Every structure is written in structure tokens, then in C-alpha cells.
Image (cartoon, rainbow, N blue to C red; front, side):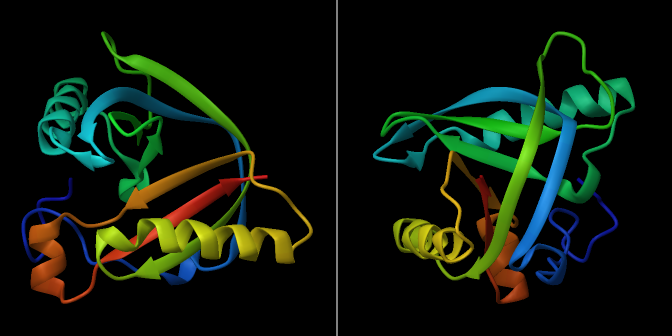
Length: 158
């Protein structure tokens, strides 16, 4: 994370580059790690982020645009994909390619189900179907409280 932010943690989020946009990724590099959940509520999210950000720091790598995508696998776990600018040793390096429609939402995390439905409607309005849906929780709860806004971006692979 950029420690030069107001909070020393998450930067303020700008929705404009992500609001109702089409994004094409070709071999965008991520590292992938598993997050444990209880009914989709992550229980070790911070630990997973800290562990992986320490790996990035050790390798002199960056997390471009602070993108961290959550792929909800089940009620009990999700994959966290952290964008990186180079492969990270001893990590699950993965490349993601495809066309994505993105849309930014503001509000509490428990609106995720409502946002997923809104995203489906948005994607269908473009004549497309969702193949995969990722959630980008752009700001930790502490920083969201400081900034007074809590943004989440949904990426629908179409």
C-alpha cells in the first residue's frame, strides 16, 4: 500500500476510471491467495493482505492501482487476487485476460448481493452475460470511516 496516503493505509478512491467502463486485460498479472469466510464474511482478510504485501515489499514489487479482486467461491472461502507488476516467488502467480465491464458502488459491504444484481442488470443492458464476477473492496473499513465513503467496484467478465 502507499504509505504516503492520509491514513498511511488506503488511498482515497476515484470512481471515475471504473464507473460503467469496459476494460480489457491481456495477461494482467496477479498473485492469488485463499481467504477463509463464514457466510461470505471474511475472517482472515487482513492477515492474507498483510502476508502478501510483505512478499511484494520483499521483492520490490508494486500493486498497480491498488487492485485486489475477491472471487467468492463459496460461503466459506474466496480467492483474493492482488495485481502485481512482476511475478512473485513462492506465490500463486496468475494471469487474467478478458473483457470486463466495471461499475463502482458506494455503501456498506452487506449491500454486495444487491450490487451483484444491479451489475447483472447493467451487463444485460449491454447485451452481454456475466461469465465471472469479481469484487474490489477499494478501502479497508478503517479508511472508509476516515474518508466517509466506502466504494466497491464490481468487474464482470463478459
